[in-house]
Image (cartoon, rainbow, N blue to C red):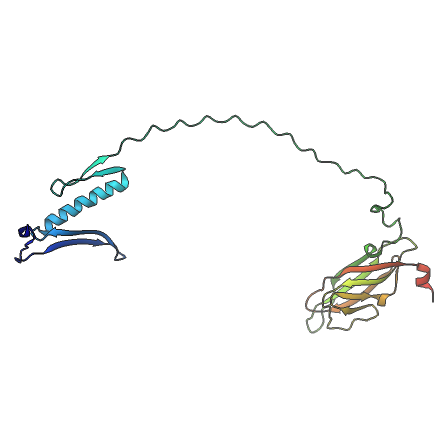
Length: 232
């Protein structure tokens, strides 16, 4: 037995053949080969192994156990079962009925509901106040200016609206704004016309300057008696 492990240098040894990939990771190792065997026979055997492993990766095969002298006899796996026939195309689904959307019919206003004609029904408070904002003349320093018009859109004679508060954020202006027309009381709370009423169709205008326009929206407005609003 020891004679088969005695190599060309007359002492017992073993041959090891290994292969690595480009990342220096072992991909194949053949160890324990008798020292008497030459390198050529080891290469031939390893090449046979490589072919068998390649076939095993490409074609389903089963490797039968065999002795070192008999080698390996790959046998093909049993043929695959016949493919199942494709299912026949399902009949198209019947067309679904189209949903009928309900129509909205205009009906006369009923007491306690939303009034469709606000102008004809008198004062509506904050809903009658409109704020229009546009670009003004830029200051010589280059700061943009903006004009603001606050209008009472109600056309009825008894439409006087007072206590108009506007959501205005942290409103500020480079130029002075008449505080009797518009001033900030607190964060997001500005007062229009010093709290005094705007009569029907009346418009209040002012101008401010800043690097950006402030979004202005009516928060609170109260209808008042026009006679009291015009009395000295």
